[in-house]
Length: 168
Image 1: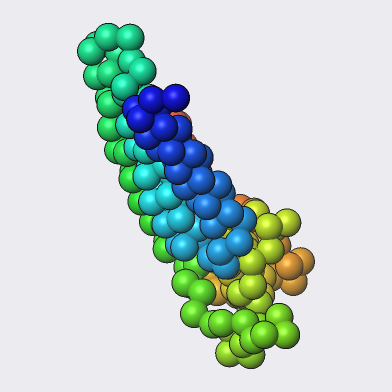
Image 2: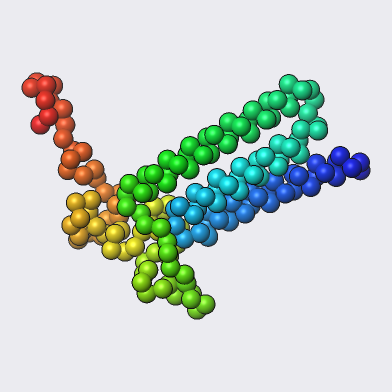
């Protein structure tokens, strides 16, 4: 095994490790904002390390440029997707998780309900119980529906009437 192959192997292993850490962050972090941060940072670094590990094995300079272009496109796409997810969470009123669990595993009483729960999906995992059952108008929902499954607010339900060419 040559020194280049050893460096390649280390870069590939480190890239795979960063992917694993990013996935672990997605599963373990308590709110959508820290999950997005974990995925965008760790996965971009992991992909970069893998690309640099593959560059010495590229068959031609054109293949090496293609690898770098794929990494560049993934950087832009990841940043854009992370921004859009965080903006959607902010617009829905998802508050960042501010509490810390105590050693016994219970949640800080000031922050009750903000513990991660993957069974409820990306949005509801960080929403407190009082927000998860609230209607976009601010009224309490009696059926306990979450905001991510609620129908559109009344302002978005107006439809265009082609006969009168106006809103109904």
